Image 1 (spheres, rainbow, N blue to C red):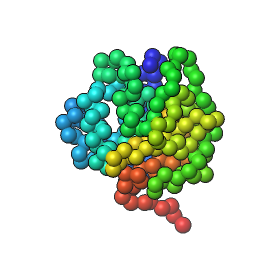
Image 2 (cartoon, rainbow, N blue to C red):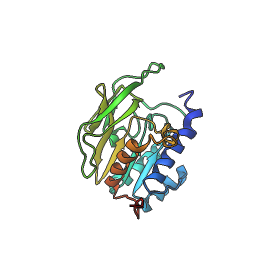
Image 3 (cartoon, rainbow, N blue to C red):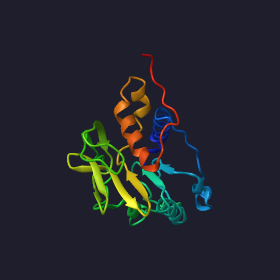
Image 4 (cartoon, rainbow, N blue to C red):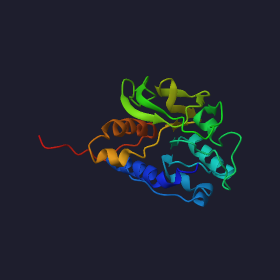
Length: 212
């Protein structure tokens, strides 16, 4: 995980800028708020590069999804406990419907290219869309979930129904979103995420149209 810390602020800002662009706002929750019922008033939970998650937090998150919540994560989610000790299996892998078939060798084995979306999922219209992206965990495989997109056969936007809710594991990082929007290159990812948020019944309260 060394080397990622300096980019965490870019990852978080990418999520926040994207949320703003689709007309949504986010609150920040501390671990204690999650374990003490703080998720009950929310429809969606985003875990931006959240590697360290305690088992107590994981149980609260699982209950949130079971009750109908939408869970979104990017990469390496829940692979360490709160003390930085690695889990044998990701503590939320069952929620996302994924399995890691091999451990990373420490090298940058990410897969980069055109990501093609192969099918829709529930009310999220994704089929036929395409973005240029980077798969962060090529060793991931689905385990009951659906890979809605892929680059060179490596899965991304992995969607899984868990109880009454849904979990989507992007397997990409939005860290470049903020810089892309300054040059008008963010539209593809923004519109994808607009569709994904509909899984949680989330959409902008109003839509602003340009002048005719």
